[in-house]
Image (cartoon, rainbow, N blue to C red; front, top):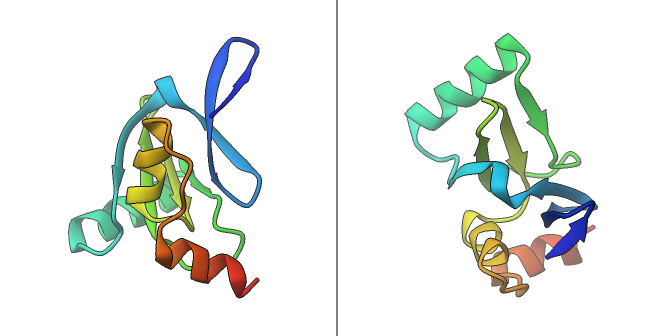
Length: 98
């Protein structure tokens, strides 16, 4: 976890960071309702794609109504929120292929 200007930030992959206190939910992108939510966010301009062209493995919802896509798994993002910096096995494999 990083601190910038008094805000705690977590890495969501590939040099992208989010303010911890702004995160409402971290969810997997597999279900139809989440896919609809992502599509609606894309259509209304509130989607932030932080995957750098990789597969979406987590969807982060913020208190401002933005939806952020991450290439890290939901478990990894949640773990970083709790202060654990370890990558899950699937995140390590995805990083090795870059």
